[in-house]
Image 1 (tube, helix red, strand yellow):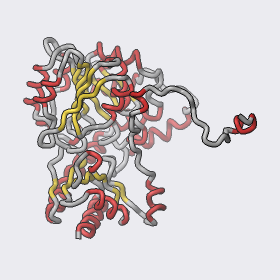
Image 2 (cartoon, rainbow, N blue to C red):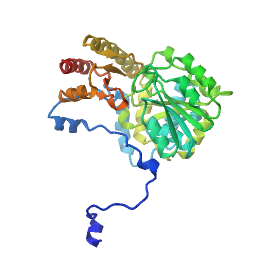
Image 3 (cartoon, rainbow, N blue to C red):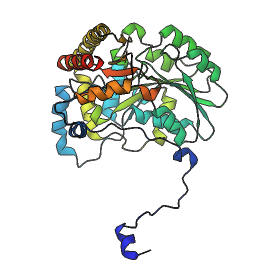
Image 4 (cartoon, rainbow, N blue to C red):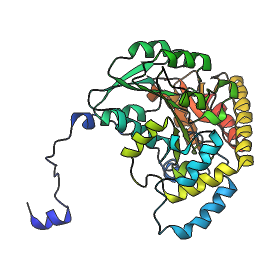
Length: 380
């Protein structure tokens, strides 16, 4: 090999001779969306709106923004590795102990920690489809075995999931509400399911969208964490990305029995939550007025959009989240492309096997009206 080309990295067609494990080689990377600016340049559009990623369209709390600005002068310091103040604030709000909370770089970080702590090669994990893709990818990295149960009537099929449990099962992931369907499990059904699951495995309830649920659909977090004698332990996942509008800071947390939390602390990185995320989340947590305003606006927008898309001949599916599914009665990919040309970004569900469905996030009043106008034009 030419030494100069080797140093400069200019060797054409060079291939590495390393051996990549099959479980890694077979992973399909999580598909990131293009930056908004790049989409606008590519399609020659301006002032586009994004209703594809279940974000908070009203942004973070003004208190969080002020706290973040003040913290900029401390960026030369390492963050608090224990997330002491944020964990204490969450514990007080939820009525649990700080030792029962683990903070992470988004709730997806907690998913990764759970798989690292409890899954080794050949162990089994049960998930549903469609559901959050990162459950299965993390298991695959560890060499575990994914068993995927199709949804039934857009909901987790608890009966089949229970039947799939074996002595090798280590984790069961249930996103509740489910993403992308927005459906929620009836608490009585979930309690019965948990009582039937062996004590030797962990059930993970991913509640990324729990803030938007009516209270009668929420399960009792405290009792499921503390009163676990005679049944399986339960881990709850929460996030600041949705209702609190801090998706860009990547901060989430898990609430769980202290023994499980101790295991996760053994496998997490020392500074897995950056200082800005901790400061922003703590300030956002204290702004109850902004939080409640977001919830009310979301519910109002969800009702409005669901009603209006039906008038266009589409079917809107009920949702407990800040998004919902729409059956457009045609090819979802074609609708997605046509909407994109109008500067409205939605999510096609064809990759999930739902060929005629799109998913949209509730936006501001102006964004919602623009979406409806564009959808009507594209359907026509």
